[in-house]
Image 1 (cartoon, protein in one colour):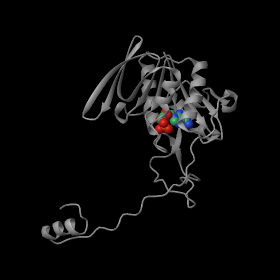
Image 2 (cartoon, helix red, strand yellow):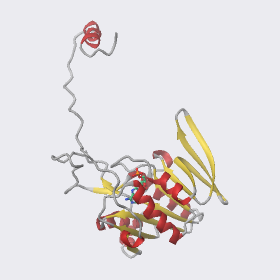
Image 3 (tube, protein in one colour):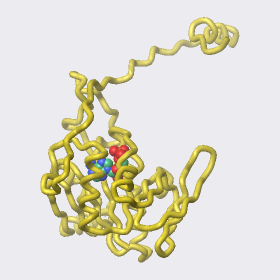
Image 4 (cartoon, helix red, strand yellow):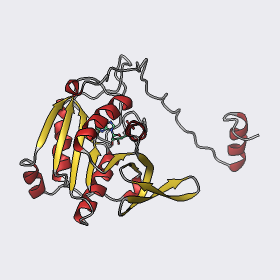
Length: 250
Ligand code: AMP
């Protein structure tokens, strides 16, 4: 089984995002970027399937600027066999990413794609679903457990009030939830070995698809700062304040 793992370069999740002063987007310059955390989980799952001899090859793919090579090297250090950058200067929307991936999938013919359920920068939660639709493949979203059986997968999904297990045929697109696994850290020897693994670059233009943006961001702004809290000296005052000032109880 060949597994493709799409990975996106996003602002490191430890950094508090700040809006640009002109409101045109989120400030990224000079800040630490990293692999989208849900994609680390996707990659970990693929590498575990390879370690169990269920998968034969794990390919990490990123669509974006040349700077995304850094997360592809990380993917190689974490266990991917090879990496592909679909390079473009466009800020890609989920539809465009899915179109790029679908073209690559035509060429690479993987049996399984494991994506993150969402990229933490734009929280779209769309790419995996659009990709499955473009390919006409089955999909299982928000996976918290994946079991491979011959030409099918049993995927457990976290839904409101419990767990649901779906049986999907391969090829399939699965998107990962937080509790699927705990990703490993890249060890120094593996970081060194990753430098020798293949990292191919394909220009998005050469795929001959329309990836022009359909959405224009009008404004990005930070939430209003929360007003400072106050201390009250009795429960009666607290109840009074909740009634009259905050108006959260009647
Ligand atoms: P989104 O639909 O943008 O929330 O992203 C969902 C998932 O699609 C991510 O977790 C990645 O696995 C994949 N993805 C999104 N954007 C990209 C990209 N530019 N390159 C590679 N994979 C991506």
